[in-house]
Length: 273
Ligand SMILES: [Fe+2]
Ligand SMILES: [Fe+2]
Image 1 (cartoon, helix red, strand yellow):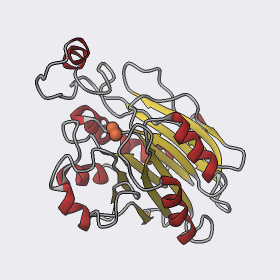
Image 2: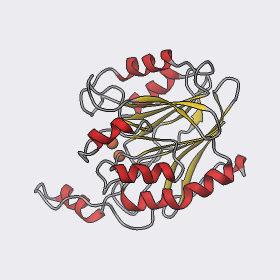
Image 3: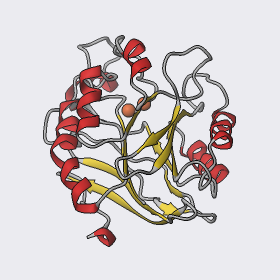
Image 4: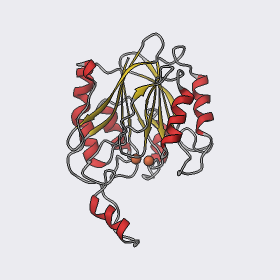
């Protein structure tokens, strides 16, 4: 199978990059499943139902979230009727929505998508390792799911690497989100799981993590309240990871970084061209 995961969409430049480029990429590479983190899609803060629909229509099979899940209050309501939108699975019991779902793709495959949040330098949540284990045990790779994608929304690379090795051989892909900066450590781990510490963001990289530079810098220079952070509005770049899996095992065969757009050195899965 051909999987594509894209990091946090930040504001309109991130959305436009997805809307303009994803349909062509799906077609060109015959992608089986596309998952995108959308936690900053609405002006940098959360996601609305209209934006979620827009991203799904552009060719995403599922959208994941993170610590910004509830920045738009409407998400607490519409997530209940949108099974392709996932919030972290280790949020407290009773939290609206779901953290994992077995998604039917247009190519007729079934992909288990799990969104989980780390705990280092983040909110105190339930154990992310145990939470993901439970989901995988209920829906094992190559038995129930054709592929399993885990979005680890976390700050610390140590926690993300630990999750990658913990799940190695049991899922197709463990990919980090949240830092908005793509790492160069994409690889296939010893037992066949594709891994990348952070997918980066889909947004304007002439910025501080996708937000306008001026206010971001000012907040470091002056410890006073200022205007609300706004997304930078230059052309957006797509950033993430492309993974090819073995049809029999569901494990990764090869991986490539995906970076398309201005500012970052471009990269794409040449083995699919
Ligand atoms: Fe984010
Ligand atoms: Fe985040």
